[in-house]
Length: 203
Image (cartoon, rainbow, N blue to C red; front, top):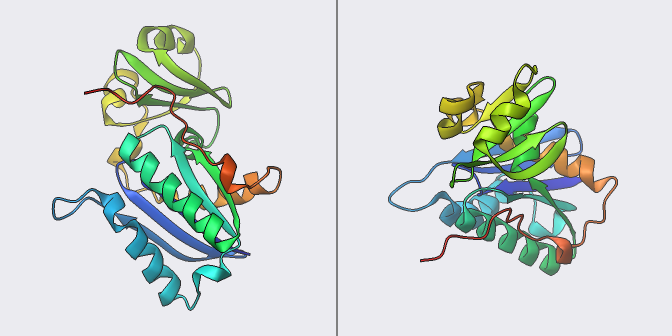
């Protein structure tokens, strides 16, 4: 099974290609030349497929990050995933960035990402909890042993490990989660929708 996975919702773009049990590519792209990294998504996908001797028609499953994260980035990767899956008549499935980052912890993960308005997007006890007040989170985790994963801003509040401060290849994690979810979920591109826990800021 050939699986293509990509993520433009977080601070870097991740694109990975896996054929059966072997990763063929796992690219990490940062913003460059004044352009947001999602501007390079299509060209990166084309290059990865070409360099590994595949055509788009060979793809069996597409996995993409559905958020939370950059609203622009979420829209970009979901739009590309939907269009590709529809055009190629292949399966597509979404994975939350909170689920992806939770895999960075060996056990008992807690993920807290900046949601602004004194809130954090929270993943705790193997569930996405939504946008939760920071003080409420502090109280709920007091005297509990969580492996905390954050972004740089929330790291100042909760400690733990910031995914932005380390070189993790989240594309590989996304790929494996997509395969895992696809085994038990319907993979219809029509069901691929952004996980907007909070609405985009206006103005």
